[in-house]
Picture 1 (tube, one colour):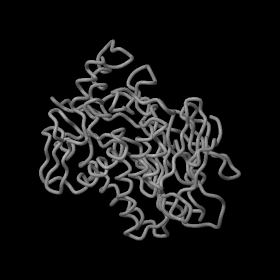
Picture 2 (cartoon, rainbow, N blue to C red):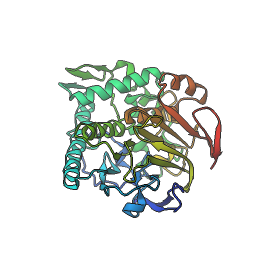
Picture 3 (cartoon, rainbow, N blue to C red):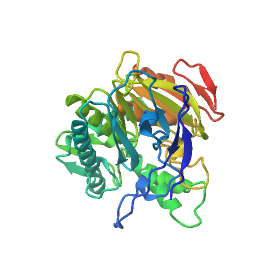
Picture 4 (cartoon, rainbow, N blue to C red):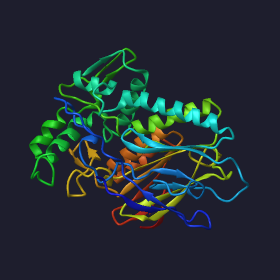
Length: 388
């Protein structure tokens, strides 16, 4: 069973609200020979993302949150329609502010169906997903358009980051999963020789992607989209809601996306918690589609998936070394789209600190906050915000 950790909402209104932080439940596994190990295959301290989002806890009562959002006090408005469930292996929620509650509930059903459809494309857990079939054979003819789009984005981010982000890192992650599944495994991880062998199967430059075919290029290669898929699905749901006239929405499918305003008419507001002390908020942000706000927020940190007893050994792998990157406690990114925020929060966790400014300069609409090992927060302007 995954641990349940307390978290609290920052004092965004006069009343301090308390909610409970839950980790993603581990799914029941089906045995399958030659299945590529994925993030769902091992017990986790919690998911790789430190944030789960909830809207206006004052109105809805206590909800599972790690990153809490709320508005201020304003005139009465329709009570939100809230869905809570799971998506891509993480706890998820959607909050729709709309006067027609039956219409909002029907819209949520459409969104849930879309989430399930996209999970059948990107999941490493489902053996019949498009991504699993690509990894099993190394080539996929007539791939879904969503897979083509997200693999293309991942390869672009890999090139821009000089391979710090590499979707072909899955053989290395599989090696770590298999290593720690063995009794008495070394807490420092696999041997240098085993890592070197796994790294021979990694290389984003060998992947060929087109509308008619995706080909991995190297024997034993495999792709993971865990660093971007939750953001992509979040954006697709947001697009679906916007296309159907829902302009005041809060979505949390492992990454956050906010549209319009909360049920009180105020902007959605976020409090990002300290990974080392989830009961403490480090800084606050306003999210939404109004001028001066960012619609999407993602946070990455090594606490998300620790393989063993050593907290320095986790899922944020540097493909160049084959070892976990430990530059920061966490990295939070806001961006116009959750896909970009998701990918950049992962990438910025891996690139050396000296390279983060050149990388961010390629994405001028993204902003990043870094929590260092001592708990100090550095904001987008390079200044210190506070101490954890």
